Length: 505
Ligand code: 6LW
View 1 (cartoon, rainbow, N blue to C red):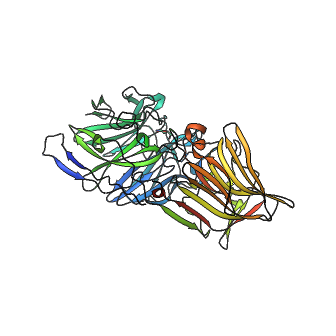
View 2: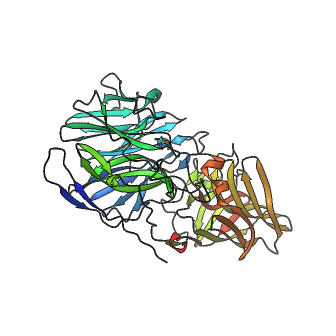
View 3: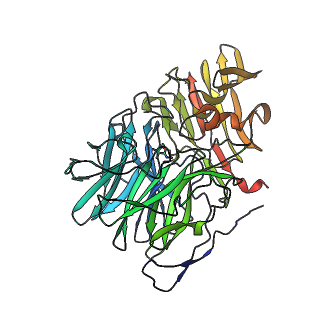
């Protein structure tokens, strides 16, 4: 049954300068707004148009960008990093590659700044249209993860966290050159991993918003302010301004709240997008860190997130899509750079050619098209036909040591359906079922925290979804899935993807 709780809350807004309270009423919004693997959100609001970017780690293309005018409906308008020249990914895994991006707008230009961990460090790209094309990367001198930009007049400041200290410098946004010495400005309130800094200006103050505690359960948002951009920054006495690592938040399905970015709408209202994950089957999450939203009010000159209350889940509407393979949309990704010659579309079929790479560590370029699993009640289904000896089917991927495949394997006259699980040191073929021909309908379905693997409508194996969680197998990403071909040539028919969490009571 469709459950659509309301996030609408009436907030008394006590403005720091003592003006009378103003009432802000939030619209009814789903939460998460971007379900599934959408970590480290950053947002820019230009008039009514809002754009969110997320980190993408080892995936190509990288840094998905979403557009909305109402904060409820988000459409992916592209990927910021869609050319290999922008995104070297050598040996990148679910722990490496593109970390938290920031998106900003100044004087007709959109900026996206991020860190490519393991392949070049901090860089930024620019565009006049957020849907692209984006420029080639401009590499930056100040290191530390989670770089952000703050524009004021003709000055551009960069803030990041070298050596775990929030550090500021002025840069030339055209060349990336540092124009002033890097100055440490805050270490947070004592939580581990001070990171994710953003600077905002309001009412004569510079506000420095950061995350502390690490991206797991103790994650939190804290804020400090100063009259001068280089400090001294004074910590908000009411910190943290958001955490679910508290008595009020401890039983919430939503955990790990942190890494946020505030923004203001044309109506004057303030908001924040941030990451959190939903736990399933105990203290596990396998869908990745997702993007949530909450209203921000100001009390005594400090931002207050969601009226100081925990964030409530408001299950997004379900999605049902049929891919006819006339085109490949921006939601489809590869692990590292695709070998383009191994992908073809013909007459409504997807034709994949294997190169021997599967999903284990060191298999850098598997022929695979993967999209995010965006709900815990979801399925993906397609037909596959192998026209030669080989292996092809559907992959369910979290990390090189946490994945499953459901495939058709053909060796001469012998044809089998095979389910393989890889969960840390456990690596086994769970089911091997003879097939009459090298053609089958394959489906992976999740319901009730259990994945089922179906061949021609029959379930042949199952796997508890917490086994593919970040807590068990690691990584900064979330589950993705889709067609792959390890060896031989495989022809895939239309693919159906569905998620509908509102079926879960
Ligand atoms: C990101 C950091 C974080 O750079 O996790 O949760 C890191 N926050 O800010 C990787 O996503």
